[in-house]
Amino acid sequence: MFKLKVLFLTFVLAFLFLLVRLFYLQVLSPKPSTENLYLQTSKIMPERGKIFDRSGQPLAVNTTKYLLYLEPKKVDDEYLLIKKLNDVLNIGEATIEAKLDKSKEWVSVVGNLDKTVKEKITGLALNGVGFEEMSKRYYPEASLAANLLGFIGKDYDGNDVGYFGVEGYYDKDLIGLPGVFKSERDLLGRPILIGTQEKIDPENGRDLYLTIDRSIQSIVKTKLEQAMENYKAKEGCVIIANPKTMETLALSCLPDFDPDRYYLFSENEFRNSAISSLYEPGSTFKPLIMAAGIEEKAIKAEDFYDETGPVAVGEYLIKTWNDKYEGKISMTKILEKSSNVGMVYIGNKLGPEKVYEYLKKYGLGELTGIDLQGEVPGYFRSKSQWYPIDYATATFGQGIVASPIQIITAFTSVINGGDLLKPYVVKKIVSDNKENLIKPKTRRKTVSMATSAKLRKMLVDTVENGEIKWAKPKGYTFGGKTGTAQIAIKGHYDPSKTIASFIGYAPADDPRFIALVVLKEPKSSIWGAETAAPLFFDIAKDLLVYYNIAPKP
Image (cartoon, rainbow, N blue to C red; front, side, top):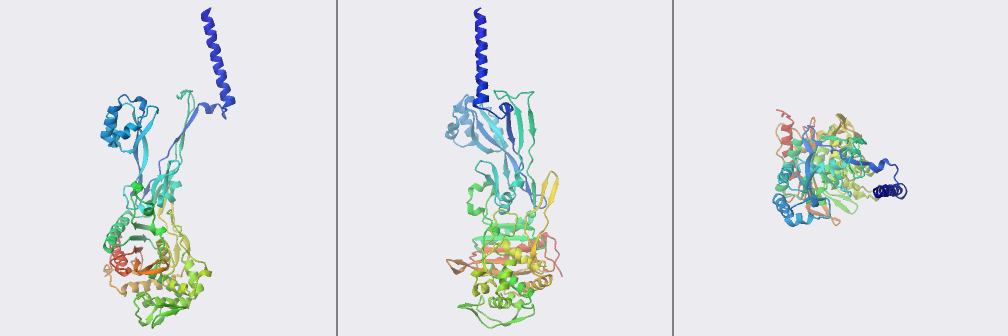
């Protein structure tokens, strides 16, 4: 009888427990459905898309790393564990000891471990030690294309996110879509074998194939590093592009950073000066105004100008760079001698309205639309803020600011037949064996084919008959223009600090590449003709060999 009472009391207590539990679940803590009480959902993270150069050479891939964690309650010999782990990790015994909090079920110790370290620790057979597999971005070419690629950092929630360059601009394409694993479990968290077990695979990120040629990128960076050392320049930047499409073949700016260890560098070093820094282009801008003058029939390529001395513009006096005057000179000679007063003459023939119109037409003050994160449009004043001296100095590239990518894009339009193209760095996007090819895009026309042909000839003469005879590869013709712009400091130009530049293309009759070289504050010489131009020809020599372009007899 006593046993029956005990059994009856047990059933009553069990019934009351179930009744209280149901009241709590359905009244005090209701859920949308009873299914949610037992159904656990977890994310399956996708693999980030990889980045390759135009020929398939890997520039950004993913590698497997490991997070070492401890389960303190399972550790049976703390002293032995601390000593052995530190022998492998060398992070300090005190650091490991601080992690052994017996009140916690799980604590992370150190991440980003490679397979070799994991196998060493696994071989120690320590209780309470485990590993969690994790994917990490890896840049096999290190800093070769850091400005272009950007890097992978963390957002506020600790998730991977792309910053700067291609990683930032194409982050949504690269990141992919996470999958889902749904598992029905009992109250103790164990899987119910006959319950719901549903898996939706993740969609991995798309792979990007860049317009960049790894070999050309390597040539450019090596030559730029050498030039900066030789000329003692503060900063340097080189852009190489296909003038027919504005595909970016190489882009390197220094100083740069290592994307694998971006956290060791300052934010200023992440800036890609090719798209984010503004400068006065100086004389490299003169061919653009020359082209505008010919296009508008304000001048003819065969015209002459009598260069007798300085030109007064209001209270200002504009001189040539060397304060020497040639007398009667042709339009081509104005470019060859880089005559500021000759350019003011062309600007006067064009008129202020047309000067302003062409500055806008060439894209100053607007984004080029290049597919890199961080491009800035530059500052371009409204017409009401312009004065006669502003129109005059703009004709020789002073008093206006632009980014290197804006200048090379505008200049390219003058020599490619008049097409202002959108520069781009991604050639195709690949997803599940489907390819999305990126095609060249013309933003607008700047000049006619006829004007472009005249400018190409004038620019060849500018290189051939310039003030300095550069070490040009024999058998090839080049077109181009130097630039030397003084740097404005507190409203005044410092004659000892310049931005030296050169923009050129080759072969002149059918250009395969166009290049812009910019060196900031070179100390060996302030002149673009003595710093930036030699660097251009040094790079061009290797490119002609790389493209297997035979010299003409």
